[in-house]
Amino acid sequence: MLADVIDLLADPVDGTPLAGADDCARLVAESGHSYDVAKQGYVTLAPGAGLKHKGDDAAMVEARETYLSRGHFAPFVEAVTGAVQDVVDLAPEEHSPALLEVGAGTGYYLAHTLDSLDGARGVGLDISTHAAKHLAKAHPRIGAVVADAWERLPLRDGVIDAISVVFAPRNPAEFQRVLAPHGQVVVLTPAAGHLDELRAPLGILGVEEGKVERMYEQAKGYLEQAADPVDISFPIVLDKASIIAQVGMSPSARHISAEQLAERMASLPESITVTARARLDRLRPVR
Image (cartoon, rainbow, N blue to C red; front, side):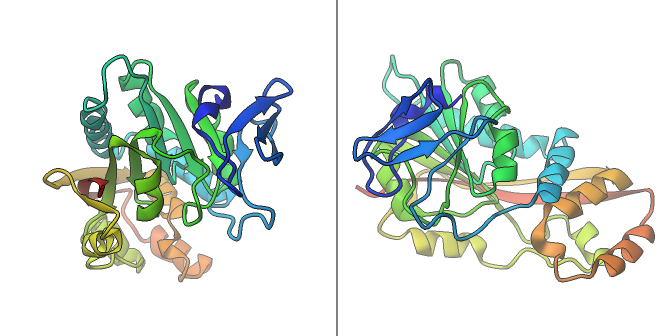
């Protein structure tokens, strides 16, 4: 719940601390700015002009919830949780770990990690209000925040022990600012060939080359490698319902008309075996 993470949050306009008001129906900054908490339990923390983008729509969020709930990416979830646990172990003793997931979506990854870390609490940040409605109820120790990861993060300086980023945007300068001295970023990046057995017959765009290299280039001066990277790959057997959910949760098929996509999906067998591929990196702040 938001009440568990208010001490981590900051005004997106001026960075002053936020506090709960009216039984946490609003968050109020020291500077006087006020932000209403939605009835679903999330809060939108954006400057006066509001958010420039909307993020995933309701259909994409539902597709993501359906796909992930079937456990197809379980090895990814376990890898991210294990890496976050390793980072949290670096924190001082008698410390309540504070986690942040950027692009948290429905909260599937963050909820799993919190289940594995007694006493930890997490801020789930996503730009989609549709995702935030799921995120707010994904785990009792998640505080759901709608915000733009490319802008100033609505968090206080140095308060986060571990940031997780799963196939989502990265903001190295802001990650450096909000991480505690011992904190690290755990990044899961799709690798070349990820789900290609499904992408090829459907004509869906593949993973760009050089994603990890660009990440490190953008991180220069802010973040540096903290541990050896880990390559993760595993087979998945997808039935038609899972294929529909996988395609529906991804923007990579948006260049194909709905009619074309439906025709191509109809020609697929009842199940197909695909290979999930990603790389896990850990980065620490440059001090």
